[in-house]
Image (cartoon, rainbow over all chains, first blue to last red; front, side, top):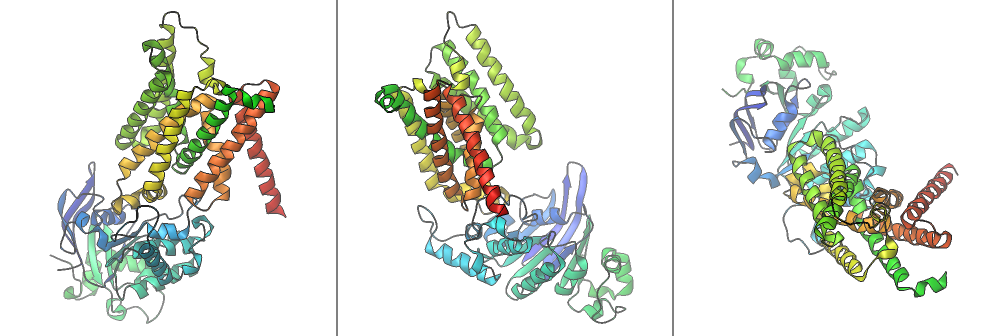
Length: 261
Length: 269
């Protein structure tokens, strides 16, 4: 049993089919990159996994249960953390929103929650900013705070939707380095546009454009045999290789691709 | 001016000014951070329908306005759930239709000739003891709700999608904020009138937002700044024989202008 099992899922808004017969098994401590064109269904799949959207067909299981029953095991970092930056709220208060369980004090916040939130901030290297107003941080710093908020629940799965959309290139690498470090203990799923960067860090990739094709990319040399070692991946060739099942199957032995039947 | 403090109606006006300022500081902060200013305006104007209803049926004005405003708030809450993308249209509708109903109900009330201007521009010098109890009780409820559910309301206001994922009952708190806003609007009508309510709910909040780094701090500062503006406005209105509600708003606007100027000078230097 995987950490997340998506079986035969189809989803449509009104009449437009967004996801068609999706099968995906995420295993413990995977670092899965979900890539694909805009409108291809990446965020929709995330929302289905989180139980925000209910698929018309098929089932989703998170640690063997319905997503809504196991939400406390999922840490979620939403897209667009740049909204509401005028909001008067301290970093530590944002992080404590992620806290789950434990006894809640009658007013305010408990010692345990504050400790947990500071621990999560330390994990992302932001503990010095605990009392700063969230709007005074840079985009990259804010993104770290959102990751800390997700970590505050001690999740076994961390799901991020476009975590680097509004961050400069250096900041993007920092975020991915952080995720790589976290992936030693937590299963990570990232939806991303910057495929060339993400694929250096991920060990599994799923390309979604209505249908899904799944690839094990833990061994980059084997997956991309023609590619010069250590050289930067060009987005176009990556998308061509990972996007269509046909070309992928043609260039690789079939058993390499763990596409569920 | 000191001898004025010995009059009962002036004392009532001062107490009402402070109570309403504190309530509108807290609720105004919530309205601003939740981007519901237009919505609060709609509820304020719709409550004129309640005033008309109360006049027509011979009910206490506060009761009629409160019932109507809360009904408008619930309607808005239901509509937001069903048709979020058209909500501004519906608010516009509630805004105008509520007022129209009020005007017609007053038209058809036989022999009614009280000055309706007092509801449009406030009548803080005509606050009764019962009004003060109502204001005090509402402030008590608001403070209790905010201390008890502060973190849930904070989570819903800051990031409602995430709050929902963490099991916070977003719809309940959204509706609760709307109902408290409706009731606050009703008591603020007594002080500044329904046309000026929005300024009372937003000007102090705008200043407080810049000075605070937490929602609780923003609510407290808003309340204190609103009280300062209200009391100053009352003094000005007494000294120069001007309409009290309008004086309070003009003083608030001058205060905001002064604040922005000082802020700018600080930034430059």
